[in-house]
Structure formats: structure tokens, C-alpha cells
Length: 326
Image (cartoon, rainbow, N blue to C red; front, side):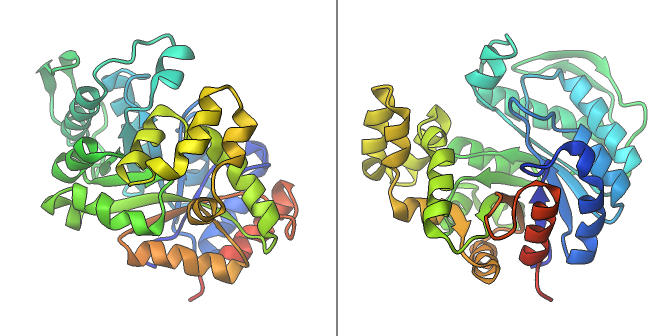
């Protein structure tokens, strides 16, 4: 694997306790640190810290919602981070969904495909130093240029799940960000990007629990997947992947308000496909299968495991155990 990343902030680790872990990551063979952004940490603060603590790491967002920041503010923030960490920044953007855009931010969730497409076009022009002015389908810009043009311009990736957005990622972005998919799903996803997508970077967040205790791992996996697989976007994604029948019992329980039942109804096999678990060696081998199937940058989202313990020390022990073997 040429790239081997980790998702930050790390579970059970306060941001103030990340420094000694982040500083050690390059020595362990990790090349990347990426964030997401929903209703917890913002997508930029942890990256600014990581870029300062470990100048060897590439940092990226996987992904930022396009509707919760104005286009110019988004470009300014990316350009600022890129000035602090030249050549080491990647920006991934996506549509997010009504729970994060409307319910907690009070912003109408409108025209997600067009807004992602227009934001990608705007960012690529702005980060190349162009003066951007005019009407896009989903917003208008009277005139904007970043104050400090990044050199090189950060790549712009799209978080995508289904054919229309996947095709957009292949056609207009510098790559794809995806998650909550099995190794066997990758050929279908990459194929949907179209011919251009075959040479683009594919970034995948891979959820990992390095434990030999299958019962513990599956309980953690179901707690995570019960809600995710019944969310509108991921439910449609897994329908497209052919799992509608498998997920029907979970969906019936969810619709009836039985959220625990919905989690319990996720089959063991699907949990094992979407949550990497086992010994550290088995976890690395599973991640390697993602790479062989088309992932360029695997991003480990590590869950605490009983063998390593919780908190900063436990997470550091887990990351050491999961580190790539040269």
C-alpha cells in the first residue's frame, strides 16, 4: 500500500491528547490523516493541528457538506490550510443530508447534485487562482479570488454513493471518497465512475475494530450500522448494491420505531463485511483486499478494542498494532 491513512479525531481520545499520537503516525508508516464533518467535530481544526504536529502527513476532508459553508468561505479555508501545509492538503466535499444541513443548521437542503457539481467547479477554479464571477445553477458569485493561491492547488474529491454522483466524481473531480461498503462492492462503484474514474484516486473510510472477540466486534458494528443503514442515503446506496432483501427486516423494525431491533436484524455476514475485525494481522489483510479492489487511500476509522483498552494509550497501542508492515 502506497498510502495508509487514519481518521481523526480518534475515538475515546480528546483532541487535546492527540499530539503525541499524531506525531508518531509517520514513523509507524501512516501517510494520511483525514476528518469528516457531520454533527461532531468540524472538518478543519483537527487537520490544522495534524499538519503542524506531523509535517510528513497528507491531510484531507472526507467529507465537508457543500451547503453549510458559502463557496468563498470554503475556498478561503482550504487555501489557508494549504498555505500552512503546501502540497499536503486534499479537500473532499459531498451533499450530506437533511439531518445535518437542515435540522441542525437551519439551511434548506436543496438541489444536492447541482450544489456539489457547482462547488467542485468553483473550488477548482478558485484554488487555481482564477477570478471567479458569474451564475452557477445553485449559487451566484459576484466576484472572488483567493488572497493566497495554493501551490500546488489541492485536489478536489467528491463524496459519492450512487451512479449520478459517482459519475460526477469520475468526470469532474480529482477522485472519490466513499465508505460503508464491502470489498466486493468496489468494482461496481468504480465502474459507475465511468472511464475517467479508472485513473482517479479512490479514498475509502474503513471501519476497524482490532479484536479477536467476534461477539464484541459484532455488537459494536451493529450499534454503528443500525442507524447508518436505515438512513436515507445509505439505505438507497445498499439498495443499489443489491442488499434490499437482506436489510428488509432491519428496515421494518426501524420504521416501527424499534431501533434496537433494527440494529439486531443486521446479519452477521454484513457486519463482518462492513466492519473489519479480527487480529491486527487479519485486519491488515482485510484492508489490503480493499486496496487490491481499487482503493488508493484506505482511511482506518479505529474503534476501541478490549485487547488494547480505551483512551489515548489504548488507541496508540491499537494504531501501532495496525500499522502497515514493510
